[in-house]
Image (cartoon, rainbow, N blue to C red; front, side):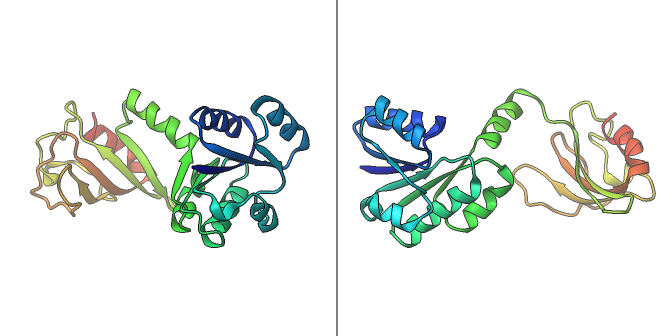
Length: 219
């Protein structure tokens, strides 16, 4: 398998080293001359100096026969361009991109990048497995206004557990707009809807009423 890696930084270096140890054919494309020289000294003749966003460089690298292109630079825009060019111009079967800013992940996926790796999101997923989620999360605050959307989770200690929506002492400016329940479709709850453990409630309220909601639903 022929694998082209854009970027010879730490991720590109260790990835290349692991792939070479597996017997794969690897070429690293790196702009920095000193990094190229270090990679050549440590890994052998597997580094090419150049800009991985430029078609001339990619052509010289033989991208038309590459099986995989992996973009690992610290610049998301460069990673995106490299993968796009590889995918559409050279018909590389699989493109993988490192994402430094997790906000960009949806853009990469919409533009057809086969796989994305967000270090930030990966770490957060592991953190969330170890730390229980907070039962109240702010989803949206209306700009210039006091209205906000919040999400609340009904826990086993919640005073709202086992009660119907109509029995809750909610402030007048608060409306429960959505109920999310495991293995069920999201729905708008009625006054007779009984709350169960782990139910997630989306409520439209105001900043002034948040404490009252938290007290009545979460304890």
